[in-house]
Amino acid sequence: MFKPFISANWKMNKNLEETVDFIKAFLPLTAGINDVDILIAPPFTSLSAAAGLLKGTNVKLGAQNVFYEEKGAFTGEISPAMLLSAGCTHVILGHSERRQYFHESDEIVNRKLKTARKNGLEVILCVGESLKEREDNKTFEVLDRQLSGSLGDGNLEGVTIAYEPIWAIGTGRTATKEQANEAHTFIRGWLKKHKEGAETVRILYGGSVTPENIASLMSEPEVNGGLVGGASLKPDSFAGIVTGARK
Ligand code: PGA
Image (cartoon, rainbow, N blue to C red):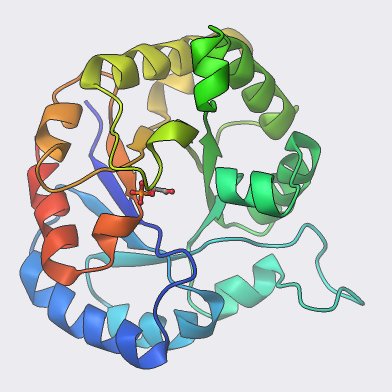
């Protein structure tokens, strides 16, 4: 059985002060919970301050993006080593918003994943279909393409997969637990077919996760945790998701 993994994805929300306020309120709500892995992923500008507050606690720190080169003339980009020195252990890659608004292809995601892993960052790799693709019965085809392109010839060590159907992100329209489990089962099967060590990879569900629906989603055998956007922005709501994920 997998230890549940609940990650916040704050996206472009919270300045420094708001980050500090959140963490100060959140830590007491989840103190002593060690049967769930908890991660928050604030914007870059909040990482260092967050790391200071999270040190020695049960909450880990991740970034929402990283560049695929190690250093050099890449104005505006952030390297894996910078994230490590800011206190991150994880990075989220391949989020649909990055794919859509910043034109990140599977090839770019793969390059980022390789550099992140080489530097020792753990990766949460996001995959998921659009509404049109689901309606056209192309969900598995899309997942196959994204998994194979993003993972490339890399191994699964230090990788968590997040299944995030785009139509469920920020829409309040959660996938049913059966839809989530069906996609996760496909992903597990794909990993087993193509990679070593697929049994140990956690597969998170993302898309309108709330304190109200997390327990039901987690009751499915292949749902090993959640990647949470909107409902991770308030300490009590995110804490409710963490406690609801305990199996
Ligand atoms: P949401 O976002 O929980 O607001 O739907 C999830 C995500 O995009 O990771």
